[in-house]
Every structure is written in C-alpha cells, then in structure tokens.
Image 1 (tube, rainbow, N blue to C red):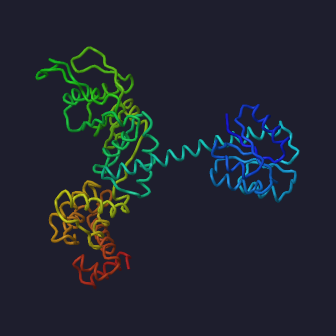
Image 2 (image 1 turned 120 degrees about the horizontal axis):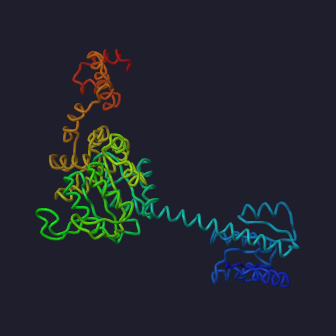
Length: 457
C-alpha cells in the first residue's frame, strides 16, 4: 500500500479519483490547493502526487518543484485540461512521471498510478543500495585508516570497493599480495564490517608451525592424543565460532591439514585430534598468501579442490611500488604515530627526504616504509628528517637494480645496467644533468658522453 496525494480543486473529480485510487488499495489523501497539500504533506509523506496543473494560487508546476525539493523520489502525475506541448515539456523537465490530459479515464489513471509506483519502488531500491555501498566504503576506509593502512589511490579504492561488497557475505575470501601489503588488516576490515563483527576474529600463521602442531592448533586435541597432551584443548575453529578465522600463509600448510581443512569448508564439521565426537562449526574462513598459489596447485603441492573452496572471493593487494601516490600520506601517518610511541616530538620530512621515499621501490611494502621511518626518527638530528637520514635506502637501491632478463653476454648485461643507472640518476635529479653527474660521481663531460651513447640526451 502506497501513500497517494490528490491535489485537485474540482470537488467531484477529486472525490472520484480518491475513490478509484483508494479502491486499488492505496492510502489516499486529498487537498483542494497546492498550499493545503504542502501544509499537510508531512502528515504522511507521499509516494505519488496526482496534481492538477491549474490550481488556485500555486499551480501544479510550482507544487511539483516544491515536492521534488523535499524528496526527489516522490513521483508526480500532472493533469490538465490545457494539453499544450509547452506545459508537457515543462512538467517532464521538472521531474514529472507523466502528463495526462483531462478528461482522464479512471482506468487509464489507475494504470499510470501503478506504473509510477513501480518506477518509484525501483528508484528507491537503487537509492538504498547506493547509500549502503557508500556507507560500507566509508566505514571500510575508516577501518583501514584506524588499522594503519592509508591510501586513496585508484588501486586501493578498488580494494575498498571489493571489501564493501564481500563484507556482508559469508563466503570464503583468499587475499593475495606481497609481504607487508596489509593482508591481515584487510581480513580484519572484512570481519569488522560483517554480521560477525561481535564474534571473535582469530588469526593463525600457518607458515610458522609444523604440520602436526598446526593440526592441533586449528582443530584442538583430546587429552592423551599425543605425548604432552595432558588435557583437552579447543582449537582455533572452536574459538572462532560465529566469527572469522584468518589463515595467514595458507600456501604453506601440509597435505594432512589441507585434507582436514577441505572437510571443514565442505561439511562445516571436524573432530579434535585424537577425538571421535564430530563437532559442528559456523566460521567464516579468510585466507592469505604471498605466494603464487596457482603455481602451488600446478606443482601438486596444494590441493586443487581446497584452492577452489578458498578462492570463492579473490582479493589482491597491490604492492606499494604500484601505488606510489600513497607514499606521502602513509609517511605522514607513520610519522605521527611513531613520534608519539617513541616519545619524540612530531617529526617532519624535508622535500628531498620525501622524494627519496617516493623514488624507492619498497620491496617490503608498507611494513618496510614504517620500519624505515622509525629508523629515521631515531637517527635524525632534531625534528626534521633530511635526505641524509635515509641514506640506507639509497644504499639499498643500488643492490636492488633489476637484472636483465635471460642470459646475456657480460658486455651487453653491463650496458643495460649502466643505462638503468643513468635513467635513475636523471630521475632523481629531476633532469638536472649536473646533479645527475654528482650522484653518479662522474665528470659532466663523461655523463654527456654516456647519455649520448644510450640516446638519453
């Protein structure tokens, strides 16, 4: 049942329309003027307004604008005996659903009312879904910021959008990405914004435990199940009941645990090590790995059926070198937090120091950036981090220059490496050749010769 307002100054027509629309199952309110309707509109906000164009005082177009100003999702049907093209165009431009000419057949009016209400229902559903997505995206972004991951780059916005979509589901998620990209924080964000948020979030580092220990850690054990099992112990699946279980470094688990994990994902049940009683479990599994898990499947080290059970929703975290625009806000975030935790005045970055951070490739990703800034805060003189305070990154850059692909003659390989060094020096010197020569410890004449040799002038 929808609320429909009829605004018509002809008493007979108003009553006839009210009776017909009310008979179709809608809650009808009626007014003889636009002013009367607007004064009473808040009593029962309408889904649809059926209004005459020509009214005493405020006309139907003015009413249309006033109603749409209050709620753009209200549909408006305009009726008039003056069926001009100009009036129709103006009404439709103002957001009217349709324009009907008097005299209107009541069956035709009811058909239009039904169509208008159906369109409103669709628009309302879309609006609510859009609001829900925006809310989730805002909440997940806030959770990332609170969890020490900061970023508004296009790549990270894609990650946030995926989290917003999957948070409300119960499907398994497999998070991939290099070490230090924040996989655990993504898992926590998914849990925080899921219906399971009030239940436990339990983490297990699968790569840090031998297979026998990991099996007991995940599924628990009974007293006497093995030497040293002096009492019954609940596993992480039981502890995470109703919540989420984060399995970090999932590609490192052995065949026995893989088989048992597959059963839990398929049947939602397991037994403790050394136990006979079958336990039911309601846990969402979120797994993560920094390895190429498809390659592990192809090599026969990881079960294909388990892979597909985990790979229901894949989520890849980009390395920091692919979202360099996030380096400055990340650096500011870490400087504020680290200065406080170290009991130091708030540290700041000089422009040259920030440039060093932006040029570095960050093989250790966000975690390496945090560690580098902590080291710089401790070592710097005063409250400002200068370029020299990040010398360890400059030293590390030369060690991490990419090697040429394949096997090349030594002279060719050295030439490629020399060209790469020249390009990097020009980049760091912002194209100033004298500065590039200083960085490379070359005479300017020697630098010009090499630039010409490699076509870099």
